[in-house]
Image (tube, rainbow, N blue to C red; front, side):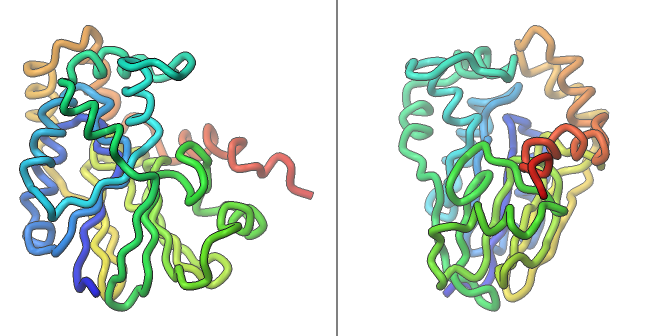
Length: 253
């Protein structure tokens, strides 16, 4: 049983945001750091992976759809990748990075004090691209929980880059938000688990981070990318409007 677990999701290859979160005292003290996918698809992919690998066994890794897409870009086996930065990011990775991404599980389970058995995944327990939101219908949650063991009391997911905590069919659902590509509010978003749930946001110097990313990355559109995502130009309303049709609500009775 773990007492404290820090959850970092959707880092998206943004090194200064990750460094800011890792410097947090509660993250440094956590027994485990669970990284719930979409780790490297961004402007500083190799440096982000190297930093996390250097933390050793404290890091618990989960694959996300963007991690899978990086592999598809380099090793084939998939269709067109929708994220324009992904093909560039994939080319920056070494073979050991690709082997790491290929080895990542779709989900992991840990026992956390106060929360019981916690399942960590990227989007939903059954799919790395499926969309659920804070206001998704209860029957939608029943769909995505189908087949999940009754011993799983808590589900942690990412993917939509917006933090929330809610109860659905007796299970606590937690989205920590995004470290590197926040929607709605700037800063690096993460969560601290055990014995309760704390949604955290780490403030850091966004102007300096944009300069650093632009200096370090050779991505051709890095200036526009860093300005848009690090400054959280997309509001939560924008994101909900974009994601809403993908959670099945258009088919509600």
